[in-house]
Length: 195
Image (cartoon, rainbow, N blue to C red; front, side, top):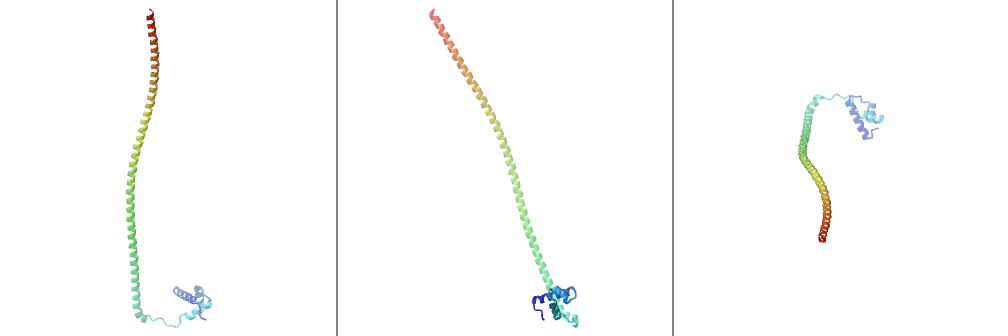
């Protein structure tokens, strides 16, 4: 009975490879547990795909002449790929550093501009404080002058009222004196005319 599912066959092949790499014994039970398949499927796959035990070892001396150029090419390709990866990573790091430095320069420029604006605003604020203090002093002076003028006006009104009263009194006195003088004058004329 052949293993029907290609997914199961693939899982069994992966399990066989990982057990072999780990140096663990490849048995039906370990293969079944690692691949997550039935015991029958693991046993059948193992019977079909287990390497034969009566095969002689790989002739390393004979294959070395064939494999050496392939190994050398593989190592050179790996070095080239590693160098390209390093160069790409280095270029990315250099670009990131350049971007960071550009951003830092822009940030420093913005900070310097902001500091200059803050200094200008502080100067303007100090000037406005000086103007406000001068305006408050002028207001206080005007208020004092207004209070003094109001007092002087009140005093002048009081003096004017007193003067009006004195003038009215003087007029009344003058009228009374005129009447008295007229009466005396009339009486004197009458007395002189009778004699």
